[in-house]
Length: 481
Image (cartoon, rainbow, N blue to C red):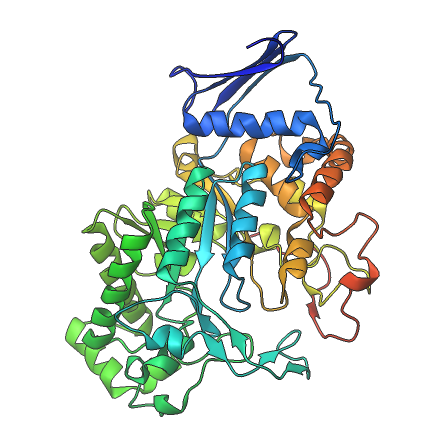
């Protein structure tokens, strides 16, 4: 009651995630198309209150003032994602909850949770306890790019219990964020094979001698295409579906070396039994098995764009990471696509070419580059463009060993990405980057209030640098493909 009230209501005529914000002398009226719309409108209201509204407690004597006016808003894409790799470097639960808060403040609504890889298995599976008992810890860690001579000679690891996962999923849902889990198959699986050697190609190598991988790159040790492996991972996915209510389940499917399959009598016999022409078709068979398995349980498979090779079920979707080409092919074949091309939105890539950039990786992707990223390729027809259900920024964590390094790589570029994912912007060349920079001057103060260790516009602070730690910088602009 009285002046200064904030009144909430729903209006079915608005899009579910859309909202209308009216600020008048007698108070604020926030109308959402649905609960999510109200929540995103509240984030806009928070921005308008000023940077101190992002602190965890109000400052003494603070009075809040709002500009009069009306805002009507709705997102361009339904999937506005961030992929977080917690396998290469584990992020404790509280850090994940903090990332969800930061995502919510930027109106991002999908956390793609990369939970397994060669370097660590991060989720408790009760029927297979050695996945975390053995697979969640490595004895040491490469410090810097895989060509670096430096090592951190102490164990690294950790995992989320099933109760931790339930908490993370509930915390995300309260912020209208969906958590999409990723269990990587059939490559990127050395941690699982180290825990259960029978999952590997035992007729090619001594899988009992394998440990959780301690360096970076693509491990040659991949899953064996056996019935035992299929049953094992069906059990993993059964527990996963109980924890994650998301429509989509990500199965990886990328970067699977075929050398062990070529040398394996077991794999060759399976190919002959199935009438498959080569090892690429064997990988497709593996993926299609879980495509069918998930569809039979009312879920949809999503995987990296390599899963296109060999054909997919109608409901499967693709994360297009090797450029735009995979997403274009998927959309033209009638599959939904999440655009996340590495050349544009891999935020583990360096932001500047200065010598002080910490462990510089790959091409330079500046704040302006990310702001000019366009998720929908111009060559798609309007009908094909409808299959681009969203976009996602990806953060791989080989060289981001702690929360401060994660902050540095994500921000401020994630703010530019969030605007691209939410807003219907002009064509990339026509976007007003100068206006965006002016708005960022205020947004840096919000990030300060949130305690984010972002990269300053002038370059890294002394404690953000990693002098002497080898990276892998690449010169020139990234290929636009």
